[in-house]
Length: 64
Image 1 (tube, rainbow, N blue to C red):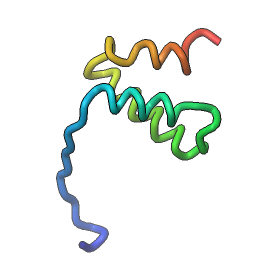
Image 2 (image 1 turned 90 degrees about the vertical axis):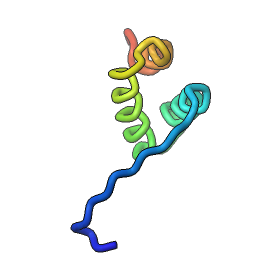
Image 3 (image 1 turned 180 degrees about the vertical axis):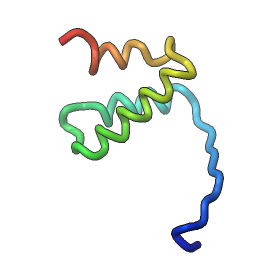
């Protein structure tokens, strides 16, 4: 597909898998690029279902 084409993509997953992925990828031991992507994913997820991810948010971005 050429670069200038756009398409819509959607996927389904469960909250437990997302929480596990975020906990692994937000760790200071993870590479900088994947931490940045996980942070963006967490912020977008918090807009939809904040109660599912507030403990992870507090763990990595809470009062320091």
